[in-house]
Amino acid sequence: MIRCVRRTSVFCLFLLVALLVNAARVQLVESSSLDANPANRRAAITRYEEPRGNILAGGRPVTGSRDSRQQLRYERTYPQGPLYAPVTGYSSQTYGTSLIENAEDSVLSGADPLLTAIPLWNDLSRARQPGGDVVTTVVPAMQEAAYAGLGGKRGAVAAVEPSTGRILALVSSPSYDPGAISGTGPAARKAWKDLNALPTQPMLNRAIRQTYPPGSAFKIVTAAAALDAGLVRDVDAPTGTPDPYVLPGTRTRLPDAASGCGNASLSYAIQWSCNSVMAELGVRIGLPGMLDAVTRFGFNDRGLRIPSGVAPSNFDTRMSVDQLALSSIGQFNTTATPLQMAMVSAAVANGGDLRHPYLVDRVTTASGRTLSRTHQRSYRRAMNPSTAQQLQRLMVRVVEDGTGSKAAIPGARVGGKTGTAQHGLGNTGTPYAWFISWAQAEGAAQPAVAVAVVVEDAEAEASAEVAAAARGQISGGGTAAPIARAVMTAGLRAAGGG
Image (tube, rainbow, N blue to C red; front, side):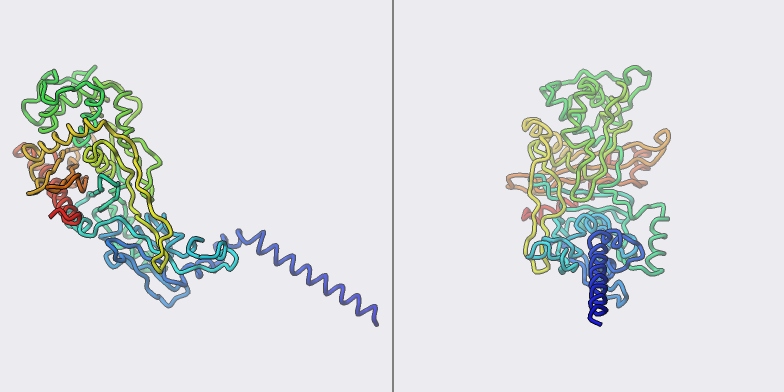
């Protein structure tokens, strides 16, 4: 009898050890694969059982959470969805996350280990802390001015603070309501399908994910390269550019919409946007010199993040001389995001020191304790300080007595550059209207804001170009400059500049 009890006890002990070994195998060896199994809904249930942390602009939440009383309990809400969609992105129980919702997901969802005071507590307990908050650099008044200025037209606005790199506004139009796709039901699936089917692509973030030919707005980069290289020592001296200007190695004449561009000075060429002068300067600088210049401004950078990834702006590394001439005036294969062109303007405004752009100021716990803060840093030295000073004067002249007069702000020093970018087969598409600018309040030590505006469907501008050939309409002064003016005005007010 004792022998049977002993054998039974040993067998039960063996079963217990086998059970413990199997439990350890499941929890330690197979846990990752089980967590990733699509049939396992526990991770999703845990993820949405608490409200998600908020994204803030101007100290106020621009996101929220709604108790759906479903298995995936809390859905994301966006009180001003279309206005802030290019900043927040979306958080969907069906389609995942994008933009800040994606880049800061671990904090917002409560999974980040920094949210707990005990190291590795989340891993050991397999629990989540309350979601943390993400404080953005966006100024609501500037965001609203940019959104209202575009008025539903296809286009984008990017505004940065030149001295710090803080992104003050980031707008893409037309926009969409991320809340429509937050859930899991038929309504969310239909909204996703409908949004992706629209030809206007409202879910495309045109401010950082779409590149456009920058047209004449790019001439600021070429001018900086020419001044830095010493090819132009006196901005008011004739450049020796022939009239008409024929693209090197071809019989193609490069047209100028303004008169007086033959042998014009750099100052006149920027003021009235002379294609011939800037194309000729680009050829004189040469491809290596232009590549060095555009790289210092941020072109061809595939690693820029704000913290979301930014589409690289392009300047070809190999091309013929005639192609270089066109690239130097923002045509051929040269393309840029609106954020990139705002960085160009900011570099001029900040004395040549281009600051690294960033959209997240800091992340905090739900109680407000700061977990991390974005440190301001220099991105690159885009140009010499003396070059930046000269370009500031030239850009001011564009606004005071040139193509950018509609960007003028009483009581402020404003610099700008208009641009029209041809596109489409045989350049038959409606030109893109560009305006890049910066503004400095009277008595202020430095400019407070730099802006880039692009409008894709500027039909009124295109018709005015054909009808009257007015320079302000041709080069973005008619459609894009008033939008930039409204954004800069809001920025000056926010900075205390009146």
